[in-house]
Image (cartoon, rainbow, N blue to C red; front, side, top):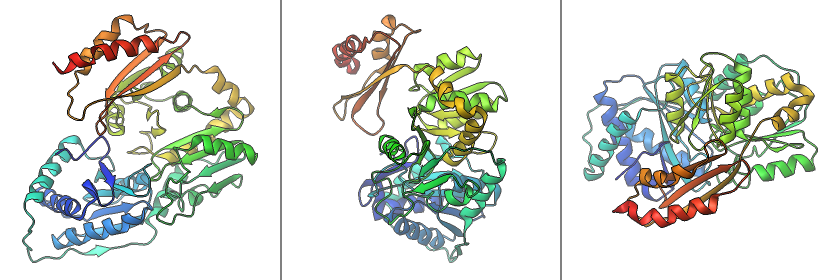
Length: 438
């Protein structure tokens, strides 16, 4: 049984990973991991606004305390806030209870080390083995020590003021609408951005069931419509746990993450002039960075992979096309709020020319398609890639094939500048698909 994906694990609450049985095995697996590491500092636990979050939190705390481990619950905080607190205070590790951009009825777990970075794969493998053992052994011997649980007030404020103090206040006249997705930023963003009276917030009334509901980072078209109808210049949307941000403009439309990566990189202009993104980034990102003599390194999909590569390469920025931005100079994880502050700096720097700057950057047309697979089908991706590679025009096209980690589908991403050859490429893949399992 595989537990951890690229970003922890998640499922519908009450099913699969979110049952009492599995969460208990997970919690005892953490106890085993904690004691094997000979830790003595408390575990920090945060959650987003889902109604199931408090149930999961109580279960985890109970088992950790039963195992003699001290715990601290931060309550509702954004994921980057958990990372920030771990970086600046003393804890053994951090657990974020969230399903990110998923609907309210899902939930999940993200694991963070005591330095604020996500757990390494090797650490997750250790915990995964512990979980599987615990699923087969229901009992746990009480060792005579009960852990202490603390619930300090307003930990999220340390993050809000901490990030705010990194940035100088800039002067922007634009009217900006921020969609907090009824998620973890609902009570944090106002504090961090209180110096900007031209910023208005919506979807800041979480009730446990409305996180990401027709709002937030996955609803950029809806946000664009709202700002145009209400005469805002820009809109910004967080996802449920706040590690991603999407930007829209009333004049320009939905602002491509890849274009903002270029502009953020030029704004930072430090380090090795290296930028990290994933293999599914738009071909335009590569062309735009080449034009300014910056280096692009493309990784496999996964924000942890982006972060680890950015550190190794001394990069200025790491980002995923989904709106995840990692700024190594001021964070140890993807952080939507930091992206907002840098966006404000872009608005001040370019002033009335910002839309022209966006239009001047290249962005290839894109086609995305999923090809269904049998649940048990083993796919030789390298074989499929090699069938298409000889006919790809590397200057004007990009063709990426990935197999989904959780769904029985092949994901295809095709970028082109002028001529659309997707049909021909798709036929080649379909005609050769059966050979990949031989």
